[in-house]
Image (cartoon, rainbow, N blue to C red; front, top):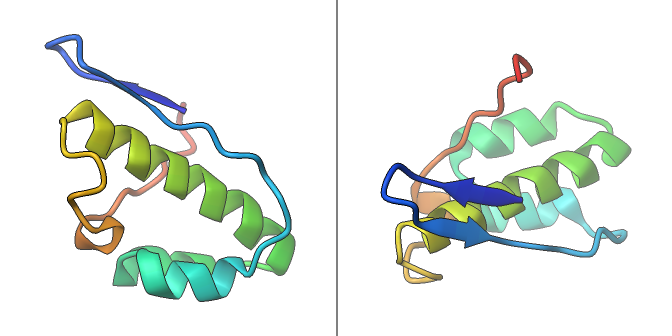
Amino acid sequence: MVCATANFNVGIDIEKVSEIEAFKLAHEFFSADEFYDISNMNSDEQINYFYDLWTLKESYIKTIGKGLYIPLNSFSIKKSHEL
């Protein structure tokens, strides 16, 4: 996942997709809204959605220069299917 802003900052996060306890990790690291979304999915969808959000969130905080100083559950990302 790559995230860029108008100031040309770029944040990149790459993760190897593997079997994980997406539901448990989402509860710990994602916002309440994101956790609600993932809790309404089957386990295969949860894994894919988890990695999508995880890489988006890490790319974003790297783009704004905060690294992992911002907890991932302190902000939400809402995926749109319009892209």
